[in-house]
Length: 632
Image (cartoon, rainbow, N blue to C red; front, side):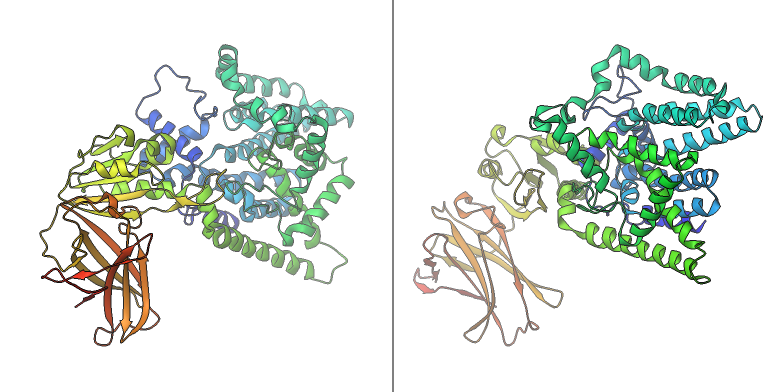
């Protein structure tokens, strides 16, 4: 029970925030779950989802249960994985106990519970987490049936049940297609060691259960073979773009990399694993090696031989594809892999050459140290790493969350590239009643009235978007979170949020070169270390040159701190200003000491962004009176 509680705690704690964001593959499962809930799959196969390179259906139906129960959220997409990852702890205990003993069962469940790789798969809304559980159940029930047959009891229902679970595993994840090789290898081993008699006739019942469960998928494969084949040809080592012209060299390299994933170097793709982290940490290194050596030395024991065969064959999906070691394609090894350090820990626990109780202390110490390292590596380092947020498209989730908060802000305009390019936005946005999708090229000038909010792509066509806003209005701009795609060398702002609201008839506070007017200014202390200064600019006519605004906090003639920037967070330059339009320009001043209104002054000014020539404050007579205006 303690192991189950810890496993559940690690999987459910901060499920919606670690890892940050909602990756597009997770969101695609959520969108398909919505289609299932709302009955939008008429004419499509219920046994395979063709979108997103093809996906098996079981996780999507599981996701539909949670989305239907708690709504569209990151948590609802990931809850299925957390539940399955926790339940697998129980079945792994049962399998290891029946293969070895109760202590190895508990330790196997513990290693599964605290190891980063299975933990991570239990916290992302993807289907691979289902395969370890289904394989574990299949072999556990199959082992019970085999032993029952060996003891003279004819429990064909156990064989049938094992076959049903095995057939159902083909609805989980693509790597399951290597399991027939594993079952064949186990049968060959039992035949060679003369242990095959208990297989008959139960194996026929097993085959019957599997066949009945697989009938829908078999029919689909016959009718639409290209659908079930998925993207195998894209990632296979037989693809010249993957093997670089040498299949043999690529295979040898992949085998080496796959064998190294246990203790040398794991998956480097940040969505699958803290980059490069091996499956087992330093505290599980020695137990893993002890368990591995024990299995090879005891290969005549069916359980030990099966572990070796299981790992060797289920490494095939990652060896025969690109990006080895790929922690999704290799997921089939996990139940067997975590039993190896469990066997090593069990050996240390009862090692007769160690002083009394020292073995037990070592096992407890190694187990707790591994748990602590997992918490640090996963929840602290990986969960807070900004690169993790980039790879899980956290900025897209932020955009969707802001849209949900903007439901009372009038019409919400969203650049269609977000809707088409980021499934997480389509899934997480909960109401479409006041949303208008647009393409900047097709947006006519002066068509967006206030109040409204615009989510614009910040890297092109912004001027066309700006020209669509009808004056008079107050416009503010906020820069969205940073994003970085797989092929991008640097992070970039994901979006610009323009807020368009009703104008306010403020008197002029100051005029600069008779071209730009400061209409309003507001100062807010943000905590103990920042001062926020909001400036509102307008113009009676068009401005030819780009200007930069600055805010100085001075004490006497000394500038204590300052902020310079193009108004509108850098995304509403003065050339876009039009009469009747007021632009919010926010500046943040970093403070080393407390702000004092009595001793310090806030001075505001403008200068040409290219020539750095100042714009002068003009008095009521039209004469320049200085380069800055002091906020009273």
